[in-house]
Image (tube, rainbow, N blue to C red; front, side, top):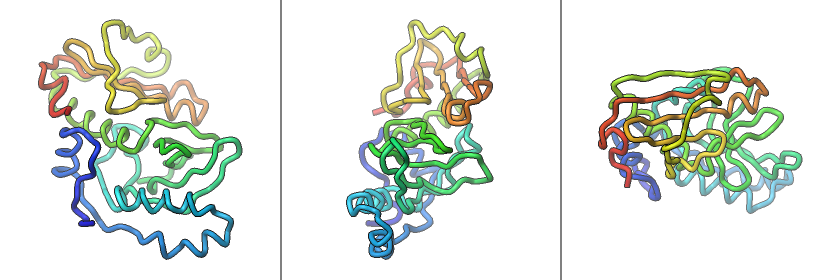
Length: 216
């Protein structure tokens, strides 16, 4: 598969984001590690998961996330590990700087954080990429941007808002209102057991294009 392909199963907004702002630096050949990983006790089906991830996302570098110190520098799989009570996970890509947690792909394909415990941010890698694309779009279109932290995040009034489905949010969610988008980030607070790290960003003053863009 060509290294400049745009993965399927994502919105046109995310496709555009990858095409314009992403670049591919080359995939790793995880098959070269299969025999070694099998000898170390990694089930073949888990190695298959890493190979499939690498075939679709491996080598993709995207602009930084507004949170999590930017997210992975490049999407790239690594040796699967079994976590107590959580199933098999594998690294989603190395951090951009030193962090107290790793970016992992969970047992059901979730994208999330691991640091002693497992906190899924989105139900899929696609959801993480969609959230990056939406943050970039909202930042460019919003008339005002407001950041809330700590208890103020729980005080947000979301009546009249609808969840943005394509981000398949778990710990992190996006909400769409009549003229604003709200991104809620709880992953770092949960994985570090630090409630003060809860964060929300309100992108206001959006017209219909700003609310959706190329979302289909």
